[in-house]
Every structure is written in C-alpha cells, then in structure tokens.
Length: 194
Image (cartoon, rainbow, N blue to C red; front, side, top):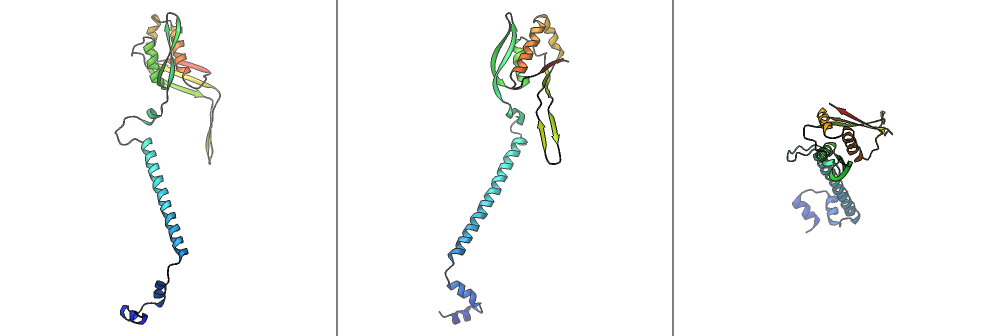
C-alpha cells in the first residue's frame, strides 16, 4: 500500500508519525526506558519495605491486637542465672536459679528460700545515680554517673520474721540477692520498710 492511499484511508496524519513508525526503535531509548523502569520499581520496593518495617515496629511498641497480654517490658527482660541468698543454720548460703532479671521475680525466690510467706511484698526498687542529662536545641545526651544507690522498699511485715531468722543475716541476704544480679556495683543500699 502506498503512503498516499494510506493517508486517504486514515485521514490526514502527520508525516513524522508515519516516518517514526517506519524506523526501528533506537536501542539507546529502549535502554533508557528499561533503566528508568527498574529505578522506579526499586523506589517503590524501598517505600513498601519501609512501610512494612514501620508497621512491624509499631506493633512491637503498641500491642493493640489484644491477642497477647505481654508488654514490651516483659519481652525485653533478660533471663540469667541469679544467686539467691538465704539464711540457714550455717549462716548465709546461696543457690543459683535461672530466672528473669526482674526484682519482683528474684524477691519471690528470696522469700521462698528464706521461708517467708506472701504477706511480705516487694513494693518498689529504684536506682539513683549522679548522672547528668544535657539537653540543647540540637541534641540530648546522658552522661552516666559513677555513684549508684539502690533503694528497696519492702512491706513492714518483714519485721515479724526477725523472731525466727536473725535480723542482720536476713537483711544481708536480701541485700546480696538484690545487688548481685545486676551489672552495677552499688555504692549504697537502702532498705525501706513500709
């Protein structure tokens, strides 16, 4: 079919369109289109990957599914062999127990090995240090101190066990139990009975 007859059938087409259709495609333009397509696909992949990562990290922080009652703190607790100190006829002894490095769990083991009932409760533990927090308009940093104080608050019901267990040894066993499992060397230990 001749060009003129084709134009008559189709209508008035620009000759440049027909000419470009007759020429084979340029390899360089194909490569450019292919590279541009691959870059676009890679960018989309990165955006989708970041979206999945962000969604997963948010689910770890806020467990809003209600399927699991564990909090993030429960998940992050380290388990280790912990020395539990207790008083017996020969003085203060220790036994190693594999447990969560959580003061409440460790306190429960300490009570059990010392024959103390559930009327005695660990109310609170806190660590004070002489560290300094520095905040300016660009950053925040914390300089770790070199003096550490462990404050332990226990229910006053502990005092009734002084009749059967020597007070000094019982309190020393508690101090050893709660200070030895941490990777901190405490400068001071305070026991508060409430």
